[in-house]
Image 1 (cartoon, rainbow, N blue to C red):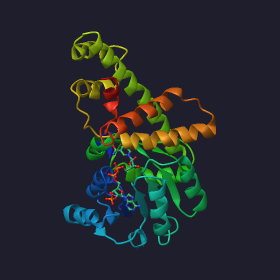
Image 2: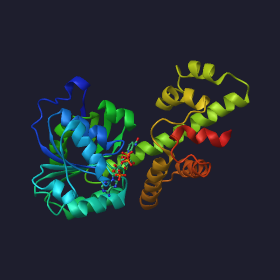
Image 3: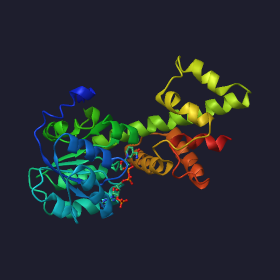
Image 4: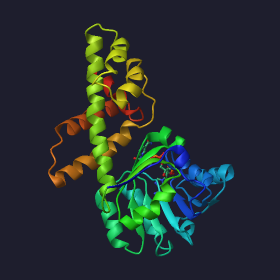
Length: 299
Ligand code: NAP
């Protein structure tokens, strides 16, 4: 595997050859990524479904808003997308690929199916395609500290790396087209089980009459430690669930995971169960709450 670990000071923002980049999808994640690309000195052609966002971004940071993906892609060296799901990617690329010049780079940061990434790369051999879903959430995007899981040819990854350096802490090339999306699925499977385990641990501590926060202070220094424990246990105990990655998005991701597992034969009993637990949280009105809200089911 080819990897690039980038300390913030090594992001080489000033050493990268400047590119004209069509950037599509200025949402929670895309907006700060695009901002980092501007800081790095790239020229941005902007498109977003609701055009006001592109105009707002251009006024704040520069770049030019366009009315269609095709218009944004004319004469661009690269197209970067960070939209919602497979349908959004199909819609955007149907327009964008009408004008994106041959030889250009296409980086997709959306979390989507591996199948779509494979199909786009196979249907468009004249582009360097990289499926590049991210981990790190809004905070990681704002700080330019995302982990980026990449699929595509070695040439495409090499071309993408200097651009990704504007907002990556870690980029990894995991294999041909689709492997970035598969790696993101691995990430989500691991998270689902850990969050449910943490929710049950806290629920047990409270049921046993322990001071859950005090217990976490102690056990977080031992083998039970995890990112979720360090960053979410306190807010879970306090019943606060407004931190980043939403239940709706997690269910979208777990649907991709379970669909892929049906194809490759992987057995994922815990991920399948946790997916249903998240359906319960949605039914309780928690669609926009963060993924640690699993504990609400146990109250
Ligand atoms: P978001 O805030 O909903 O942003 C998506 C953006 O894409 C919106 O600005 C939306 O425009 C635009 N868009 C959607 N479909 C479009 C289309 N067909 N044409 C043009 N623009 C379109 O979502 P997000 O949180 O940034 O997430 C983006 C992707 O990253 C998703 O695949 C998500 O699963 C993944 N992700 C998110 C997080 C996170 O913590 N949020 C973490 C890791 C990965 P409108 O303004 O019109 O809605």
